[in-house]
Length: 175
Image (cartoon, rainbow, N blue to C red; front, top):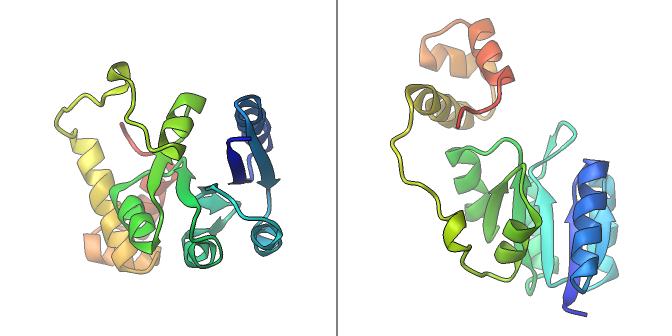
């Protein structure tokens, strides 16, 4: 056995596919789909890696990183998210995460992050300037984080109508 992995994600299909792939590669995998079960799972065993989804339903798991690092200091903590933004990444890393992977993510990327391996040459990120929509998205996320997630306060700080900001936030982050 290569190690024990705690996979915390509310996407049942994703956890089944990723869990099976990790088990085929020699890892013992424990899956948790609800925020309430995290504390129990952490106490059950020592893990070599914890894969934690940034959002479990409507609940952010950033606040759980400290608990996980405290109870499992030997574990490599990797955040998974479909809401990747620079402020979320910075916040997760400052809280104690070792890495943040944006969904959709492949098994190779997860394994590379778990084993702290550099990616294949084909996986290297292409350096290109950010587009205007991406810059706008990052600014909105930064202000929203500064305002503690308060959409009305963020809209005032950005000088835009609250509903316009909500519409922008409903869209996925531009690439």
